[in-house]
Length: 227
Ligand code: ADP
Ligand code: MG
Image (tube, rainbow, N blue to C red; front, side):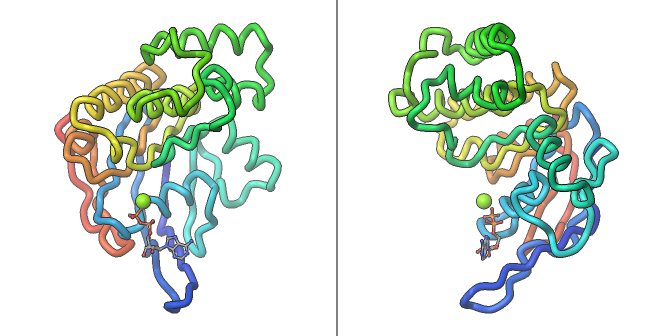
């Protein structure tokens, strides 16, 4: 279960103070896929980063699987974020100097998986994303859709219970987007994860169980998707 409770985040910049998130609240249960929609600048990335522990909210609580992630000690929090939350960033963020294999293996090695276990898991994932032949390739040799598939494989490699995807289809064409959404949905259904995707893509919203609409950092509406 993910509970986001009255989360507020302010940024201070040259233009003064900006409320990027204003009392945002919603919940998500295991196996559910949520879309966070809203125009550019509405706070989607800030929300995902707060949940991922990459930003700290000014107010509010984030409870993930019974743990209040803002109240954990720094070392416990880091461990929790590394193993229980997977992130697909808007622009892939693969490590450019590592092969596809090594990019997917990276979080597993950090997580202390054995050599053999890493090898097996990477093989299975490469097959699942249709890139068994490309394990030795470097990111710059892949297409946009392939890069995002690798980013998904890396995010879910450790079987995190929460997967965050920031506009995962923003740089893809319609057909490639549909494949990526299908892949994310299949993984989250199999592993019973919570999937939270920020998007302005109608196809992503249609695939979601629920849509949390943000406007100027506030929750405008929470509606059912078509799934
Ligand atoms: P979205 O992902 O929906 O486009 P963001 O969460 O990126 O929106 O941004 C929400 C608001 O917060 C925007 O007005 C943006 O300019 C501002 N913002 C985001 N990150 C920062 C930052 N690091 N410093 C100052 N302002 C920021
Ligand atoms: Mg964004």
